[in-house]
Amino acid sequence: MENLKRILVATDFSEQSQFAISRAVDIAKTAKAQLLILHVVQKGFFDKVIDEVLPAARVILITPKEYAEQLLEEQINKLAPHKLKIEKIILSGEHPAKKILNYTKNNKIDLLVMGAHGEYSIHDWFVGTTTEYIAEKTTCPVLIIKNKPRHDYRKILIPVDFSLASKNAVEFSTQLLPKKDLRILHVGDQAYEDLLENDDDIPPGKSNKLRKEIFLILKNKTEKFINGCHNTFIKLSYDIKLGYPGIVILNEAKRLKRDLVIMGTEGHSRFHYLWLGRVASRVLIETEKDILLVPPASKKFKHKKISREKV
Image 1 (cartoon, one colour):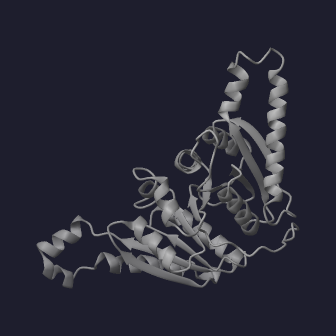
Image 2 (cartoon, rainbow, N blue to C red; image 1 turned 90 degrees about the vertical axis):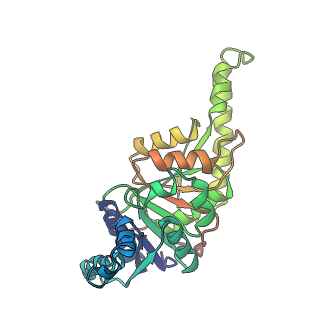
């Protein structure tokens, strides 16, 4: 992880944000990276009352920004035993997501970490807006934390659709987590299954043969895709399934007991399953696993050989 230099974690001081900070600390320690903790102060109803009705009260009352600075300072003091280089950032604005994204873009952030729930979080970005928004705006990978960290990531699922975005996600994964159990998943479209099950023109007994041929084609494409990624000296296991991509990914992540799902946020599919708008969005919202989204514009790691031996 030597190219992971600056990790930004956004906090609203909720419990989920604490989970995000804990995970970001672990990653920063492993990568020997600088950790930046950011909070966006939003102007609320109380501030408007103070400003419009009792402006003199500002002299004796602590401002939201001052309060946020105190909370961040307390948080950083608690992290002192980790001996990390930590910087606090306080921003102000009505739209935290935009503020955070702009900060990552303008300050060479290599990884953004956020909680999945809270005052501003995944729901501000994806629920009620669109996944396309963050994919277009972010310039670095985004790790969304849904669970309290209990150990480092050990089992990772990487769904791919053979696109450049999927390739970027695989390459990022092999650089970020080279010594972990990385498993590729390609989901052949449900249209294949529908064809085999419902096409009356397929003679009885030939559907199994066609199924084997389809899997062989997808197997060859998957292996060619993996071989086309950098760091192919790292052995990557893979599975091939047929079905609706979002549903299959959710089921496989659970069945295989994956700790983390890593996905590219832009892709393609012959049968019009929009990887970004439908698949990634559904997995992001419905999965119980932490999820790392790798945008096509993310800064690439330098490719170098990494041993699979344990540290």
